[in-house]
Image 1 (cartoon, rainbow, N blue to C red):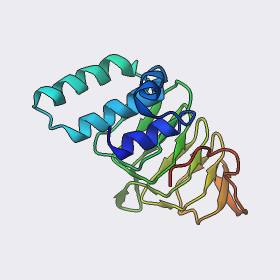
Image 2 (cartoon, rainbow, N blue to C red; image 1 turned 90 degrees about the vertical axis):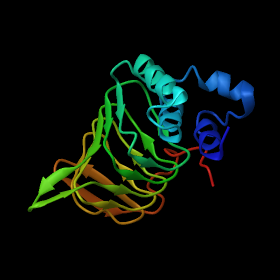
Image 3 (tube, helix red, strand yellow; image 1 turned 90 degrees about the horizontal axis):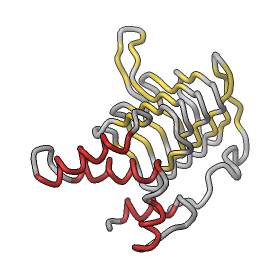
Image 4 (cartoon, rainbow, N blue to C red; image 1 turned 180 degrees about the vertical axis):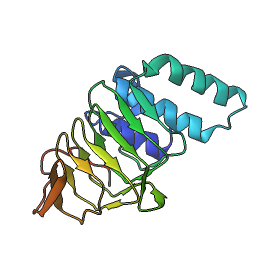
Length: 180
């Protein structure tokens, strides 16, 4: 098991090893993330690549739609079942994504762009993060927020349209069991 998968597994209750992997398999978020990592690792038209793509389709339940082109750091955590769409974006380490979240590109002011999300970011249920923007480290994006602008480090974002405030440790107890 490679280090990225170990980091993802650790986020689900500090699980590790083969016994932890078997327990983690019963978490839909970990299972989907693992299959996504295997798809990225193995080429599309190899036996393993085809096998992992079939398994991902089987276990997705049309709830998780994450692009294999997304660059996602270790310690990725999918909370709860529910529609999650993540396009080919860049996400840092220890990111937590809740249900009904959309992270993708937007066409604005003549530019098409995708977000770059930093480390230790918590994205609440129903949040939308779109456009050529940068989300800093240690950012808390509140439920049902629409974010289409740059957010600095250590900020809490809330609302529609979203506004942010600088706050010491905004992710607090929301991002647990982080991977160093």
